[in-house]
Image 1: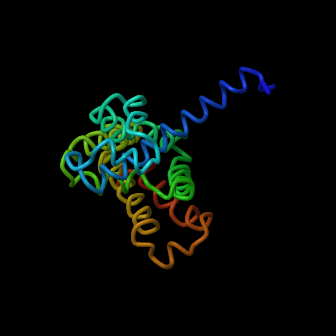
Image 2 (image 1 turned 90 degrees about the vertical axis):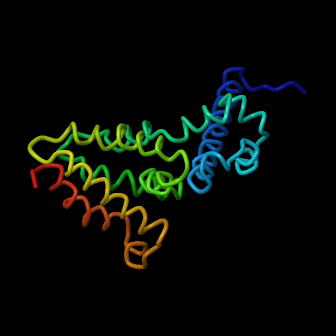
Length: 195
């Protein structure tokens, strides 16, 4: 029996599935590269983790080098994190990161910490530095902008590590809105005023 679904709906479903598959591959690639380092990871490993064929990984990314380059980038994460006016950025940073934790059980800032010490971690460090820290520092006014941007990022890294890696009792048990209310004003002070 022929499908009665309109061609555009079928095309949309295929695009949605393709996007979901591509994101699953990227997620598994980030995990693998973070825990094993570039040299020890194969496309087959990533494909198995993502429950797809290695040929599909090649179809989407072309090569291990291309996949690594995309997996090591923070561009999209940085866009989400920095997408707010400066007077409300502290709250936005904390809320966006906590939402990211809940949605993905991951954290791009914590990923940078774990990956930077691995072989080929220099690319992760450079991307993190350029795409997030430098962009944040450029938005701040007054003296100590770079130090303040790094303090903000380090505080957010600590929050992510406490929730997702160490799973500390009080922070893990605290409702998200309370964490935002407690943490955002501290971060906003670093964003607003010189040290």
